[in-house]
Amino acid sequence: MRIVVLVSGTGSNLQAVIDAATAGELDVEIAAVGADREGTYGIERSEEAGLETFVVNFNSFETRAEWDAALAERIASYAPDVVVSSGFMRIVSPDFIERFGGRYLNTHPALLPAFPGAHGVRDALAYGVKVTGCTVHWADAGVDTGPIIAQEALAVEADDDEESLHERIKVVERRLLIDVLRRLAAGEIPAPSSAGGDL
Image 1 (cartoon, rainbow, N blue to C red):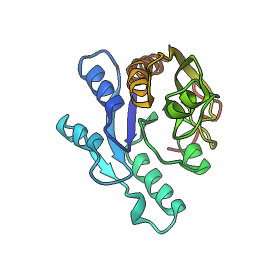
Image 2 (cartoon, rainbow, N blue to C red):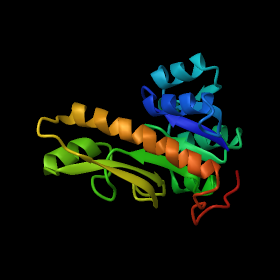
Image 3 (cartoon, rainbow, N blue to C red):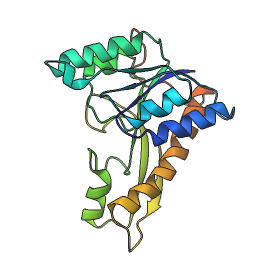
């Protein structure tokens, strides 16, 4: 299974995927890793691992639509089976989602549909929940609203702050993402209902 991974930051989830693929635990080919800005550690990690990388800088385009179209074109050039959003902090368009047949995979540090958006960990803490977790889902045109593939719960500790809770969630998130990719590669997870887009 060919994947393109998109990152905006350090790429810790990406590193877990690289390690699992290198160890033969995951039957995927990372065709390329892309970012929305220059200078991300996720891109640096990928280059160190010998992977092809690209940047479609959000700030280099006059409109979001132009950036979105350019990103889709660049990803499509690698003909991926699945596009993985790994801490990619940009919302893409419905046209982008459709272009890849709905096969745009996202991770989120909360138990969706609770606490969607960029601050899932902070929002869960502020609400006072005793249990949170992470979600792997197919992205759609909404914000963290696509069909859920897998979730895992995690207890909130009495002394947790946003940083400590997020770090514990990331450990679960990496494991869950690897498991979902493994099951996708093995054909154990059905394609999303909107599959069939033109790559």
